[in-house]
Amino acid sequence: LNLYGSPDNRWPEVDYYDIQEVVSSYDNPIKRLWEASAFGSLQYYHLNFAPALVQMLFPGDPLICAGESVKRMKTRHVFEWGPEICSTELIVPSPMIAREGMNLKGEKSTRCLANTGPRRFLVIDFGGATIEAQACLHMHLAMRLPLAMVVHSGGRSLHGWYFVAGLSEDSANSFMRYAVSLGADPHTWTPCQAVCTPGGERRVGSELVRQEVYFLNANYEK
Image: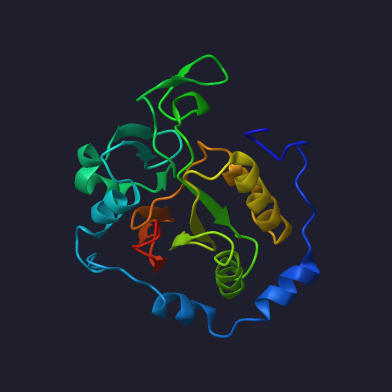
């Protein structure tokens, strides 16, 4: 299995008919996502929301990789990050197994395949569709795998975090292939691909925009 692509290194073509079928099946998708959220003990508007959320997503204080940009990624334990996680834009959705690894260029790196651990979440990004259409597509995919969270990028994307810990790579790849057929970006298949930090900050022009959580299931492992 190719960590960068499908088993034969080709992703399926986008099926626009299927996309239309899915999107037309849901009304008021953003409202439905929000109303279906189960934040549990997490207080959404509390200043410690992002650190508490990261602790919930990565229990046991593992190493995680995050940063303000792809060139400024750091790998630290969850509790080392603390409130500083709020000022990051990007995060790797699976724990790391070491603070550094050797990348494909033969250089030490804080974010590469060599120091990325087993998949915990597979993030699906439908950035090419409207926000409402993306919400519909995530609700549809949530019938196939547990949807832990949907994060707004601060721009034009909703990132869906699907819980895949313990799932075989073949099963995860089949899910990814189906998502790609619905218009998902295949790049997030790569285990060390950085995605939007939930509750983190993204710079848009001269402004800092919070990457809001539109949906959260605090019981995603059950």
